Image 1 (cartoon, one colour):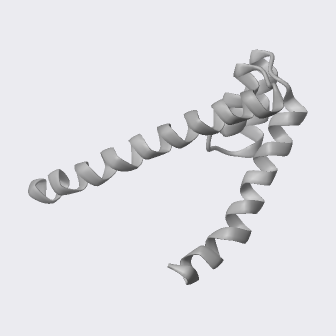
Image 2 (image 1 turned 90 degrees about the horizontal axis):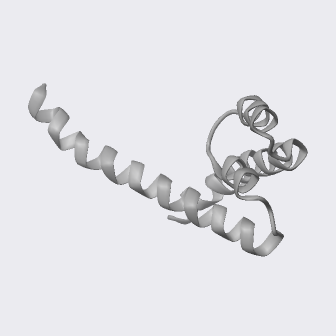
Length: 89
């Protein structure tokens, strides 16, 4: 069991790094293209539940409607794009 965990740790590390890179890249693009505040763009880019991210945005002083709209767009894009992407791959 322990030997299997060590082989999974490399995959987990890669997924964590990939997720962080995508979040930071998306945050950078949102800030540059749409002139959003750093906080709003970071929260809008973060994976998580819609209600959690909007409440966090409201609590920290971000733009709550923008975060909610971008989180909804992110969820719809995942539901609509991923099935076609898996067929393509």
